[in-house]
Length: 69
Picture 1 (cartoon, one colour):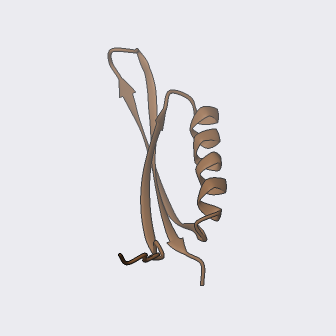
Picture 2 (spheres, helix red, strand yellow):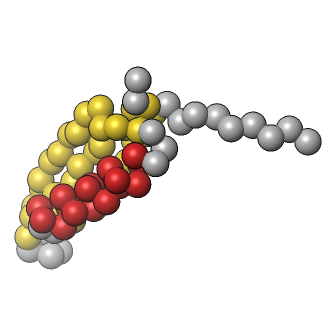
């Protein structure tokens, strides 16, 4: 039986929330969690769209994590 540990080099995570404060909180929590995997933020992309069912803005973000060098 082989026991192999591979280093995660790239990881992309998606987030959404109906207010910016909550979105930022979720992203900050994942940044801290990914530090244990030796990952740091490489790029962030964010968008805002109107959610017609809720009648308010929906904020989304994509965060690309890469291994620390």
